Structures are given as structure tokens and as C-alpha cells.
View (cartoon, rainbow, N blue to C red):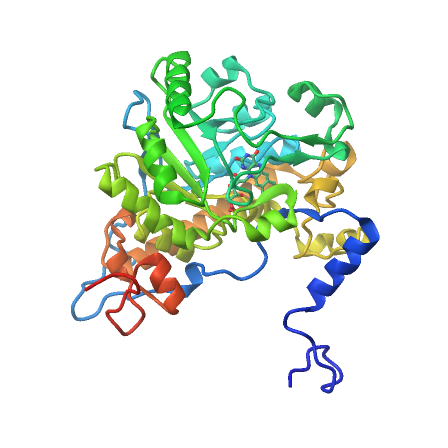
Length: 442
Ligand SMILES: Cc1cc2nc3c(=O)[nH]c(=O)nc-3n(C[C@H](O)[C@H](O)[C@H](O)COP(=O)(O)O)c2cc1C
């Protein structure tokens, strides 16, 4: 007998029809349309929390925290590009569109990333002059929608990212609802103001991997073979997708797991399509290793990265760097307790607010309303993001030193064990206390 209404133990909540399921049926019956929201998957799926580091002991030798160096730099895109990215830390800021986010929020992402020597990324809707100015290293996305696509901006960027999909919605396109199509957003996207916009789910000028190869060559020619070309995919058939992207000529693979954030997508998509990043990394690494390209084509992973522990575990599984979206917005001040009254006024609460598509964000981050956007201070936001990144780097180094590594990239699967059989099978590391990796013959 389980009571979960918090009051009367004789009342039993259904595990199948839990309170969220009931509320959603009631909402659908009222409104007649699926729910749209931002953020990433909210239900629990196997994740980095299901892994542990072994640390050092008799058989391994740790490094001294305050005296011995543990480096964190990473080079992205040195396979073909003459000007690869040299980043000081292996944590980058993921592509988030101007339109989804306010111009000051994009500016703040650039400030925080630049202070820490890392990159940030444009998004659906093009590049703003503010983010170009504040970002030392800026990656320019080429998306299926082509909104805001401009060859001059391609050349003004430090790298190009061809977006094939996002972890939150592999196979689906984006949305930007009319509330957020301000005059500036409309002008950048060549769209009418105030009209709901649905982005394309596939590129208009190609139908398969051979066309991707042609597109990559075209982008290299436009940018003089200088800029690294990233290819971003949502985690689904990862082994094959990575192999095809590498064959098409990608310098860097960006792999976004199902927990990955979005600005606005149908909830059914967010929660039910794609695979967790924990399961996708080993499949990507396997494809890269089989092609002899692991560490030659770099792997940047995302989808629910929150702490230095997540970063260290992703690196240990074989990623070269990670990327963050939702966590960066939280660091800027999204969902902060000081806005709780504002969140309550629009039917939410600090820590829960995910209606980013509505453009009513009291924190002034996911909005195009000038009055709300003016509440957000990009200098302060940038400083908070830099502090958060700094903390994650320190955490990552702490764990790497405990595993005896003088560079965070030397973390390896051998440093990890899994807490659950599922995580062991997906991450391809042994179940804690055993030598058993489910599915791997010994
Ligand atoms: C507000 C917001 C806007 C986004 N816009 C884009 C976009 O324009 N293009 C894109 O490729 N991904 C976009 N994403 C997805 C991120 O690039 C990234 O894949 C995802 O946020 C990573 O997962 P995480 O949020 O758990 O860190 C967006 C995510 C958020 C939260």
C-alpha cells in the first residue's frame, strides 16, 4: 500500500496514472493540443549519476591536489581545418538561439565563456553582433531552417556547426511561437512578426549522407578551409550516424543525448525520442575507434551535464569535451529563487519554470519582451556563468587527480564502475564490485 498524497495513508496513488499523468489527461481534454515546453527530459533515465569513479589506492597512484598540475585544455577540429579551436577548458556553451533567448542573455553567454577561455554557439535565427563581440570563440550553426543564415556571418565565426538534430527531438524541427517573434527576431529570420514559426526538421538541399559531404566541402570553400566543421546529431542510431558524419568529413562530432535541453518542443517528443547520453557515448566512441578516428575527430557531448562529476565521467567514457545548455541558463539566473513570486504569477515556481516558449520569463532570459529583458544584467550574468564553469573545472580536476591523471583527457573507462546493471550495459563499464559488463563477452 503506498500513500502519496502526503495526508491520508489510505489513499493510494497509481504508479501508472500518477499525478502528472492525470493532470496531463485533464489538460489535453481541456485544450485539445499537445503540451509544448522547454528544458529537457524530466523523467529519470540512466545517467552519469549511475556511474562512480574508483579513485586511486594501492594499485593506482593519485596526484597531489595543490601541487601537481592537472591540465584541462583541448583542441577541437584539427582534422582538416587550418585554424582549429584551442580551448582552455573542455566545457563549451551549446547552441541556443537568439529568439529563444534575449540578446542580453546571448551576450552574457559570450562573456562567461570568454572569461573561461571556451566557446559559445549561435542557434536557429543567426548571429547577433552582441554575441559576436562578447564571444572570443563563436561557433556558427547552419540549421535545417536556414533562418538568419548569412555567408558573412559564416566567415565571421570561428567554426561552423551543421545541425542535423538535437537530443531533445531527433527527427523533429524547432518551434518559436508568435509571442517571441519580435521585430528584430522577425527581421533576422525573414519572417512576419508575431506569427508562430515551426522550423524544418531536415535540410532543404540534401537527402542523405552524400549530400552532407557536399555541404561540408561547400562550407570549407566559403571559409577558406580555415574553420573546423562540426556536425551535431541527436543521439539515436549513434553508431551509424557518427560513422557517416565522419565519412562525410566532419572535424568534430557534437552528440546530444535525449536529456538535452530545448527552447520549445512537444513534451511527447522530449520524453520519448532518442537515447540517453550515457548510452550514446560508447556507441560514438566505438564508431570513431573502428574508423581509426577517435581523438582525431573530436567528440563533444551534451544532454543533462550539471557538475564536474558529469564532465569527468563523459570524458572518461571517451568524449573530448562537453557542452551545456540548461545548466548555463540556470547559472545566468534562470529559475532563480529571487524570481519565485514572478514565476508564481505565471503559474509556475522557481526550479520548475519551463514555459520558455511563452516569452514571459521573469528572469528576462528566455524572452523578447524588452521590459523583461532589461531586468537581466549581461555583465553579472556572464560573471555568474564564469564562476559556475570555474567550479565545474575544479571539480573535474579534483576527480582526475584522484584517478592519477595529469590531464583531464587521460580519464578512461577503466576509472569507472556502474551502480546499476542498466548503466553498466549502456556505459560498457563493470558493475561495481564485479568484472561484469553486461553484453560484453569475457
Ligand atoms: C533555450 C535553448 C535553446 C536552444 N536552441 C538551440 C538551437 O538553436 N540549435 C541547436 O542546435 N540546439 C539548441 N538547443 C539545444 C542545445 O544546443 C543543447 O543541445 C542542449 O541544451 C544540451 O543539453 P543540456 O541543456 O541538458 O545541457 C537549445 C537549448 C535550449 C535550452
